[in-house]
Length: 228
Image 1 (tube, one colour):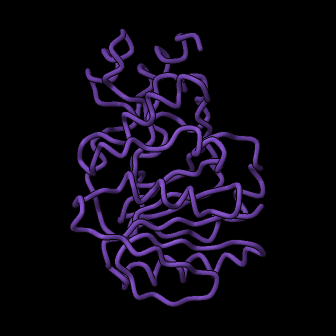
Image 2: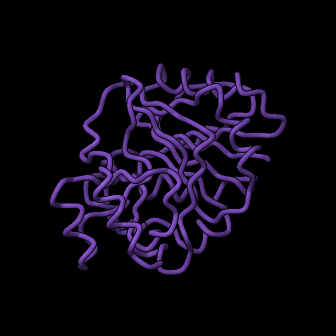
């Protein structure tokens, strides 16, 4: 499998260098790195796309769409500059394969606990919301794959096919903090299922509030009864 690694940054090159270090350690035969933002990083297989941060501050939707436009490989990774790749990442993708449209893998928080990866959205406007908001148990078991129409992908990280991301670009009228990831998730999930690769992992460089908890046994039982 070949990959384009897209990195969205506002100029924190120390972080970007750590990210690229982790990518290089994966020993992927064919890959490229695209950095979108104010960066002076010069690395092998790496392209920097300068970005005017003053035009619209926090315009991450535009940055991620630029990754799609410039990617030369079909498997495109979208990540912020605080996400780095664990040693199991590439081997896990080889095991999982490339039969997906948009896909998540394990995301670890700074302390190694689970972050916001395979996650049901608690505001879908239907009865599923009641199960989630009652206990905030929105982090699903990785093997629970029948609820794609209720999920969302955090904008921090995901993997998508270039043709799918070209068909469903992010909404450039929205900025960071304006639920741009939720809006995109709700559009794309109407046509394509979300997929989960539990064999690969990335990790945050810092500890962040994951907002949700893992589903307990009662909630899992209730969710299993929901049809696709």
